[in-house]
Length: 368
Image 1 (spheres, rainbow, N blue to C red):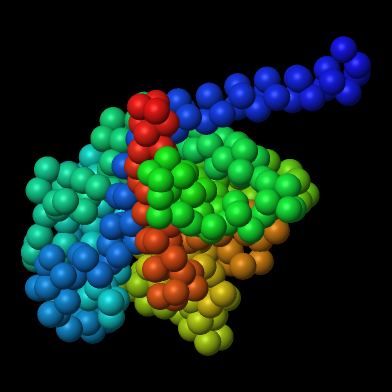
Image 2: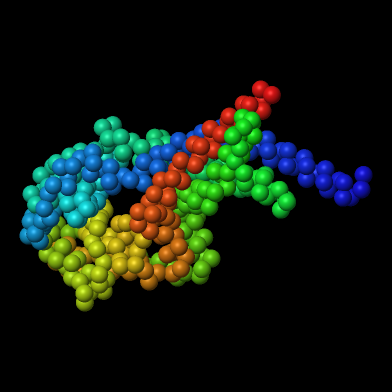
């Protein structure tokens, strides 16, 4: 056997092995990938679906500065000891307080009075159940790690599918054509067609999903690749046995995002309550050019004196950090308006379609 013949024979065997692996990995890990992708299609509209399911949340008026301070004082005073870690400020889109608790539980409070309006968790709310499925496979950290492996398998399936499809230039037109029959040709052509046209979006969704599972590795890798400086650490502030003036603290935060403030034009979004031993209040903010829906810019406050002690403008960080911060908005459909939101939702339908058409093709060919 000549060297060329040996090379062709080896390539043929590798291609046969790749086809076998693509098939069986698609019929196994592809099932989980399809389920997670379908949940992602629903979650692309989670903000709209939340208001649709609980229209009473959108019926409130935004509070005055005085009402907001009193309401926040009441909420934190009662609920922080019961596990509340952070709380979203009322906005025009969702004019109530949204507080976060352990085990994926959320509570909603009247914007002016701080009265409890609604409790949502994975037991009583389908959207939160789907979110837990999408992020943790309903199994906490273990499920998240399994999901990371499934995501890597999905990337392999997409890349191997592209390699197996890649035709000679003379056969390109035939490879792109969709057939009505016979069934074996139909399912294969549909599988290839949808897989090819939605490949960029599906691959982006899989890669960004895997990146969020292995976030420490990806973040550090991007920072190292682009030579970012070490990230700025939040200032330290020891806890004191003193009351917190929430109205003054919020006024100091508003001054930080005012026209002449260090984060001019940013929108205050999520208040992180002090951790054990610390008195620091951190408020996540969305700067003008940020993609992240909550924002990664920070306002750090001394709540005992109601004064600003530091800020972080996420748009001025290194390219590696900014690239990492763009992963979640791209994956969740939070950038690019309705067009990108609908594209992300459409992308979630591709893995189930590929799973079904791949299975039907395999079954018809096996029957033959």
